[in-house]
Image (cartoon, rainbow, N blue to C red):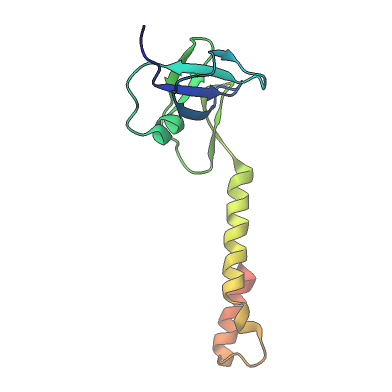
Length: 132
């Protein structure tokens, strides 16, 4: 009988939630009490478990881990229904908002009455902040 190398916990969507080392007593394969799938892994250990989780999902149709293409950008999310990358506009807009707020905060010191800036510099900062 082959030796179990790892225990995978897979969400109903197919997302790999965790990968653990096999031990003396392992959870049985199948659905756990939370509805997640427990899968025993008998093959050699992937070089990077984190990379494996990022690049694979569990395809319930074929009952196998399936490789997905690389994430096109940090604002993409994997759509398990279409088995493809999808644009996450909310995540992108949140990033833009956080970046703008950070830039405004970095120039807050220029808004105090005794800021050591010339009138020309104050006008430039004011224009920059308005553009943000």
